[in-house]
Length: 163
Length: 414
Ligand SMILES: Cc1ncc(COP(=O)(O)O)c(C=O)c1O
Image (tube, rainbow over the protein chains, first blue to last red):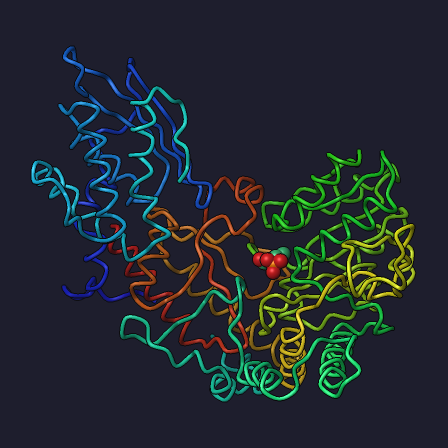
């Protein structure tokens, strides 16, 4: 049976979780693929659902994060999250990236981050489309897994330890 | 679909009235619950039986000499009779209550495996097992020097019977432990043939009936098997209760599983002796209320009748296979000749978790993941699938809702 083309509001209720940014970055990530060279790398694994991500970091001469790339196998949310992470941590010091992760994790778990530093407002706004996952506790990890791998790489570990 | 294939025997609207939860709204929409293979919803009869037991006649079983304990013991032991009837066991003492299928299989691995099997013996499982019928045998292999063999699954999602025979050929397989129905592919395994081939080579047979017993009449005597495990919560009963059926002579021969109260005949510091079966395998205060709930579930299923259930679910499955395979980009796992109401599928453009979440947004509950069968997923080159599974209360309209919901997901990711 051929389905009629969906009405404009047919995706109501789907869009609020899967906003265009997520669909776009989930399907066409800008930072995917293992780079030729990198300074640090770590893997993250979600045994509950089989998602896997490896993050590769190259540092700039001043010690800030130059470029982040990733290799992911997972859902649209985890791929989009990895891609937006790579975008938002570029140019930050490792300490800044950690602070951003702490704020983002809070947002993914609760939907907001009232205590978040005003200095992080801009990157958090960029990450905000992912905050809808807080409604799905089992999927919060999809959004945070790439960050766990990034922090592990910054710590010099090879493998992110699961929460 | 052909209207003539719809069973006249099952009045689904009537059945749905027995399940209070089905009137729930999810996100303002009617609940479309297609995850019964993970755990089924409970009919009023089960809920009431459990509540009534706690309100009117609750005490510990097998130990008090007072009225409450006598009544509770009767009610609990009536559950054993109900399960014996359900499986057509020759003897009610062959029914051992456990927490779930997982515990039943671990009991066999422990008591039969460690107690009766010898180093160098082999256990043969299949490539479509739930982790609960893989890991206990790995533990046995590692602690006891047993070999673990795995019979492969064909592209159609059936047991490769040629390989099965070959794996039995050297006569070292002492136990074949295989699912009676796959929780991922919906495949029924050819149980009688498995028993015939295994027995001819001197191997006992355990069936994991977690899924099968929900959909089809199981007659352990007709199957001719030696062990049969199932779990109550998938059979419309409560969690925390399941059963292992085993031949009396095997249970008599096997050493206990857990030690403690209830399972002894007498205890001194030097030595204890064991209670007769099945109590030898039922250490500690059992799941009394859950046992009473399981009896109500078994009574309910038998009253509806397996013939009607099987016909209804066959019709649902045919309808689902037709609707889902008509959707562009949907890949259905397995196409076994003999299959039941479980359909796993992948959408080419979307990850299974996204599919499940987007269906949930439309009020449709399916499961997504590896379904506790990672090796099987890998066999089909996937990490995860979405899975719709059907029950006595599932309607054809719900399957239509799934198909329409999936079309929408596909458009969404287009
Ligand atoms: C085929 C099969 N075997 C075993 C199990 C385990 O059941 P339980 O978790 O109740 O022990 C399940 C369900 O999860 C199953 O589908």
